[in-house]
Length: 159
Image (cartoon, rainbow, N blue to C red; front, side, top):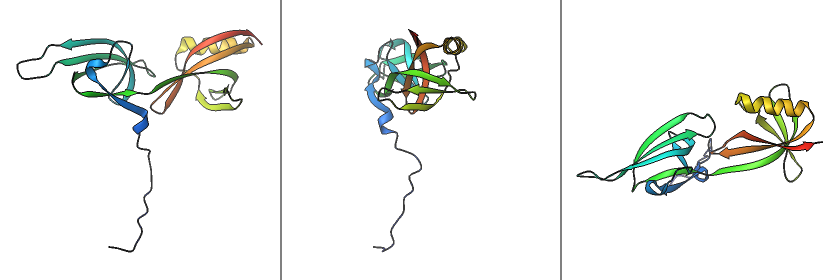
């Protein structure tokens, strides 16, 4: 045995808690699935019959929940797929900075300043106009696999 101690530098987390396994045959429309490393919402599922030597296969058509890109995957229905842990949280909008970041109020009274304005033009103009008019705005933030993005807006009336 050697007496020297080994130093391990952790450069990345294991990523274990970002997804969980689920059998492909049990994933339904409007569920979530990871395709090509991206968290997606399933819009269409079709299952093919078993062939002469094989498994029934599930064909998934899904849309990336952050980029809205359409992705497809074919998986044997008995195999496991990764399903992302998707959370939606509502925050009150406090401020919009010039560099495109928003300042949000969390439930426990702290501020969250690490989110950019959404890339969706329609939602972006709604947020900017509502904020300019001095309305009380609540934004929904969707988070999955270490990514977060504003994806909806609620108007709770004037300040």
